[in-house]
Image (tube, rainbow, N blue to C red; front, side, top):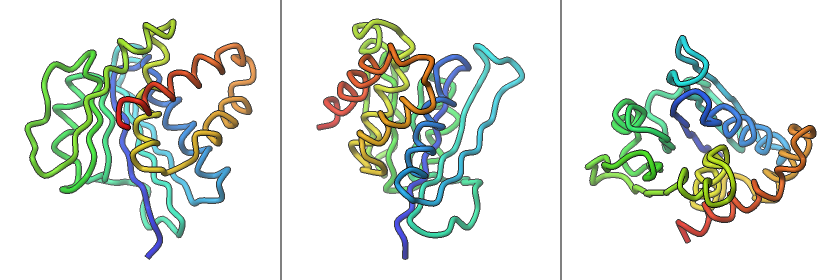
Length: 179
């Protein structure tokens, strides 16, 4: 059976949730894998709930909608409350501990507390929190290579090339938290 990765990223609109999901999906495609990316927005664009589900597989993907993902990355407490219980038993839960002051309380999953927002501020902008979290997720799962994410960032965010180094640092910092 082909290896398949399922992740839901969730937080407030404006936290870079969709960008992180897109970069992950495009990276999977660049590495020749099958990919789905399903975004969902609340009625508000900034400050409302935003989440996306990304499935990356070595084989065909049966369905793009995942009700019990293997992994969830939450950027705020409402997202933890909504998506934390959905993680498959034995799965992974990444929590932005800068903004979420509680853990899930689940004993059947692996939980990682990543101070993504605080780390991003130290790098230079709160906007790098998504990449800090993505760095932790990629390191734990090895779903794609770090080099691929950076290459995709360059290709897709050409007008923001000046942020490449900061995003690289953010990915590295996320990796450090889970090494």
